[in-house]
Image 1 (cartoon, helix red, strand yellow):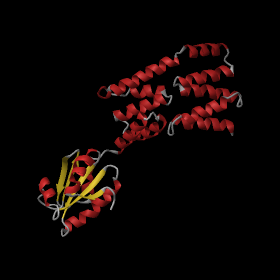
Image 2 (tube, rainbow, N blue to C red):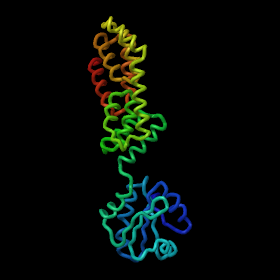
Image 3 (cartoon, one colour):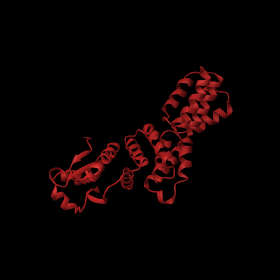
Image 4 (cartoon, rainbow, N blue to C red):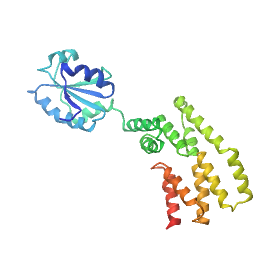
Length: 282
């Protein structure tokens, strides 16, 4: 039996119904061994439970052996299915059920794929792993591009991975209802990044480069400053120009590859500039 399929008894009732149900959806199956309808439903439920090991517990109740539990739920007929979350019944059905009917019941209460992905990405953001968070947040965003939470997380990852312009564009699509404290914090990050891009060091290098447009060393120095100010694409444009003129100039090749490799997997800029660099190298 799968680890998320259990026999519910008075001994584990408190653990399952009150504690486990805080983090997982509990599907309580009331059955009798001699009931043909119950026996037909069991493989359907065990198959579905095996697919949702992280989100669902199938708690099986033998009505002949667990009369007290049957009484607590007020079960009148068999088979009966009851959904429990956070210690309280949410939904239920009685009578024979098809696979499709059980899935329809569960889908109303199980988290959607994009919600699970967002939860994973949020954990990575809290751990300050924005590179991994980007890849997962991108999957969630592609599944639900209109979801405000997905947009906000993508914007946050964009900023932390040096894509301020993309973050700003995405923030512009956030509706008023989703402009919460998280939204405000990301707006603040954008403002700080834009201020950093206007730093005296960057301004001085830009002024020098305007006077010496062919100075490769100035381009590399400016690219490094821009990257530190979360202006990665602008930095890569400068570095690519350096490498096109002199492939072996100083540390330009290494700096460029380091910047590209630092971008998260799935970021279009990463594959775009990898192709450009490889076309120069090979």
